[in-house]
Length: 215
Image 1 (spheres, rainbow, N blue to C red):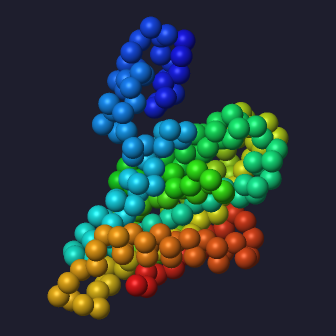
Image 2: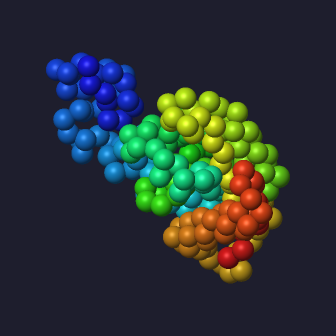
């Protein structure tokens, strides 16, 4: 039996398509999800996340609704990369992605941002203010910290840290006659979520830091 490149289900050696998800096993470019799904974790990649953040941010500002974006970083990533083999790291990231997906709402979206350096995940939280973002991040941290990652050798217990940026429901762009384009919103929101994460890092690991959106 082989393993599906997309959903990791078992696929008979002679099968051209995965019986679980239907993706072609011989031509990945034929998949409608080609280019927007991370091949290691099986979740949305940075290209998809960037587009989604821009779309949700424009919607939030136009209709005066809150929106939060979380960045999630694996704690002690440098030590984990040194101690684990590549196949173990990939297994850890897949398991981590699955655990993150289980810890969020059906209306939220999780994606993988960085393939190089410390792994970062992004979670888009529509209709979520600062307080809701903090609660969501704390739930995620507890879910990861309590999980037994049994396939990763000595690193059976890991933790993550979260940073968040929030557009409040009352936020108004400086120019009421126009809207920022998606690229501006996407870059600002993700950058400020990263900045919140870095700020919390100075106080230690397994922490949540939330900040308001500032253009």
